[in-house]
Image 1 (cartoon, rainbow, N blue to C red):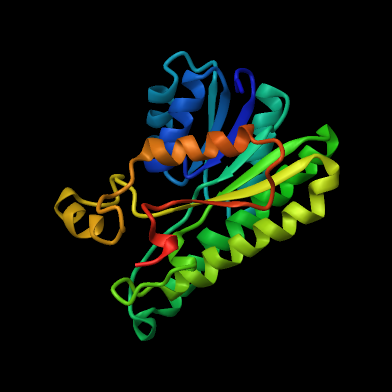
Image 2 (cartoon, one colour):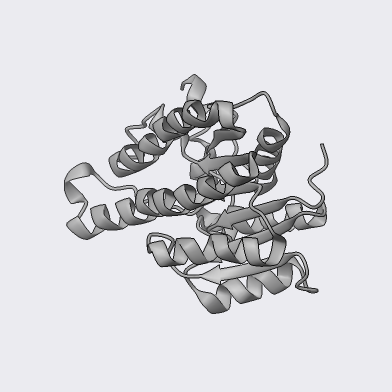
Length: 245
């Protein structure tokens, strides 16, 4: 199914997976609005995604701030007239033993992974209800379903696990009103957050023996966006992690 002319709002869009999504969507003729905290980095990413500036807009700031979340949706409406798909991609990950997490770590996890999701999703759903159609995709992690003793990550499970449950809840709440809600659960993906020297060790975390590539997550998001009879689903793109070890 073509996405030409559709409007995607992507959080965490200045680098990594979010930027890869925006690039592919623009290449396929869609319009995108990206968000990130650092304005200069975000502006540079937008220029790289679409040098003409016709298909991409950006809104800098933390979506945990309701004003930023509102500006993000308003920008999409002002320049493209609608919000077809929201991709909740912004998130953080810190692997630490449980007793070593600080109160600051906890607050940061909640702010980035949960509060931001709440504010921007609530505003996107309000617009989608007016349109009578829309799609929300949230990026989670396979560690929610298959914890690993070698990667202690209880705060990821606490926050991203909540988003997985929220995906099903929202899907059922709005199934009869034209809005679909799904999630993509990646394994460890090759992005700038993982230095090259760590790749060999990270590859071993996957039964398939390799890390994932950004385009494989992008393809999963695009599949869900085209799958009109799919809602409440979590699609695992994790080299077999969710199946076991």
